[in-house]
Length: 537
Image (cartoon, rainbow, N blue to C red; front, top):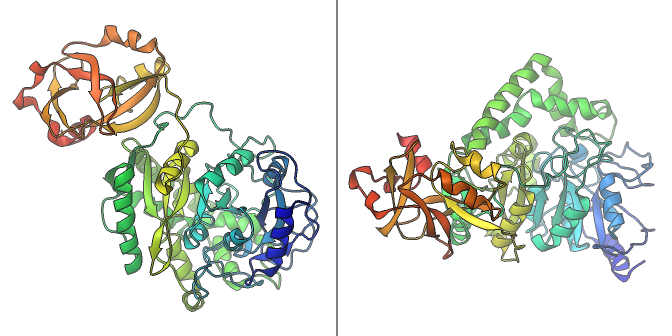
């Protein structure tokens, strides 16, 4: 047993709040690997062989016959599980108080909740370098935000949930809590991989999905004030200022996201929890609030489920449009940080408000990373970066930029900036994809560019450099070396390929127009980009 593991076991037994349900006195030895000898904690809805998986319900006493796939993969990478952590019972909650083993509190305040349901896993970061949680509706991101940690919620299916006690099987995710993005990377890499015996498992594509940029430079934010507690509103304003220093910011309508979030517990979707563990709600150790919430699923019909699925599909389609012109979406993790007394006074209402910005991420098939963003009234404040499914790698790089950590280099072939018909979703974009192109980044032009409509075989714009304001929307595509030559015959005058300066100080090859195109009657610079012009006309 390594010195680090011995130290972690000693500290786990001395934690001054109920973070651990079980400490593994006979922790297994570690092995060589990228996580060699590293101790970690496991949320107690994830199986560890020989230990009961209580899910914070003392009625569950049968030891697990085998470990969850996630635990096995971490052990194969050399890590050592040292204990099972407390949680909102059956992973149903965002407060961390729905446990007969005791309520966890924020590490910075004994009066404030730790956040749930992975409450004990967050507190355990004072003992171990990383902990496993789960995140169906925000259960990894909320405690991360309340305790100043990084909470990674990967794309659904990337990490096997075999051996995880189901809460909502179609939405459940195994997540990580770490102190830094850098620490999260090797853990997520060890966890990720297809599992043929998990019906919800999905492999990571060998190439990024269409529309996902390898380098994220454009981040969407809400186009209106959010309903936040006063201290959170001030912290959110500071977070927006920080974002503007590391990315280009675009305002978007987040109402479809928030509407989807309300469906998780406010519709027939709650019936999935009843189907998953409703047979365990009658024991003496069941938390009454958990029983009340899950039992509500019994009042819905099969028709209700299909009705809400149609509504969710509608909202998903609208929400997806956000990621046509932006790489990621920034939101607070929660609207505020409640006290233990607030939860005791209104256990359901207080908990429900905490899911305002987190409930929808799995419903909409997105990935997310919660990152520290300063403080609010002296307590940790966190925000979350959200992106489409399988954008996990670039999103971690964006999270690293947020925290000031090193980003991984992006391999490049040849870069080409496009501003009109070759943009994602526009008619000529298929030519870039056919030639093996991938989206490198969304960007803006440097100052000095103006945009005009130009004649040609289809509607298209021309960028002319002169004395313009710049900041015009472009996409930078990564192409094989031979692809540019294949494009040339299809470029109709007055457009041609030439150097195009970007707002980050780099210059790439791009579609530009002759100065003779600078006709004031055809100028569309004020729209800020071709998509916005098309939308206006």
